Length: 194
Length: 80
Image 1 (spheres, each protein chain N blue to C red):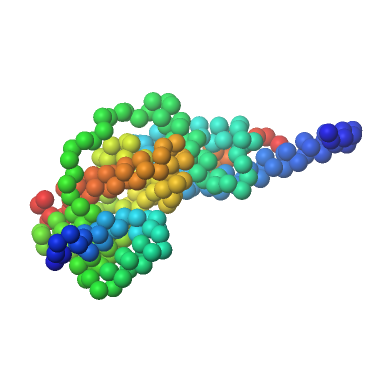
Image 2 (image 1 turned 180 degrees about the vertical axis):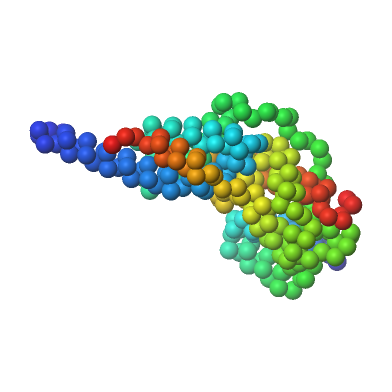
């Protein structure tokens, strides 16, 4: 049992305050990266901003449940994705069960069929708006994983932990999400006629 | 062209495309993919395209947060 002295309590409070300040500073330093993911998980900027404020308010309240030394960005995104689901912001759609027979080379092959494919210059065939619109067409369950891995640069294991799903589910959703994204991009590609 | 029950190496390479770019392959699988890519321009072009496509989508999807939101988040900190 630890010995309690009259000086111990203020010291403990001071240490806790210091740890809390450090946590808040580290969490705020990651806000830009967290926002980039949040923005593509929801439809509008306003939704993303609300979600960020709710996430940070909750993170600052429950900072002591964060284990120092673990991935703080993943911890923040776990709060954010849970809030996004809990608050019913997502308009749930039934899973996209259309058959997707195309392989991973599908988009390249389609573009090649319809003219020159310059593998180094995707932007000749697609605009920024095409990419954003195509991404928004990917159903939520698939998009969550796609955004975490492709925009958030999380590993499969981190994405599994954030979304609380098995790693095999991350892989299968990612696989399907990317194929849906490519089909959407193919529909928008300049001169593709696919 | 693959014969008999030997898997088509380009088909196998296509299957490894996504985990390769995600850096999720084992060292042995990665070496196998790279060995094939060194000799196959068909797959090499498609890998380069995929890497470029991902970079393009990632950049296109980036929207920075506003200074106003940054200030709102900072204001949520516990007062000292």
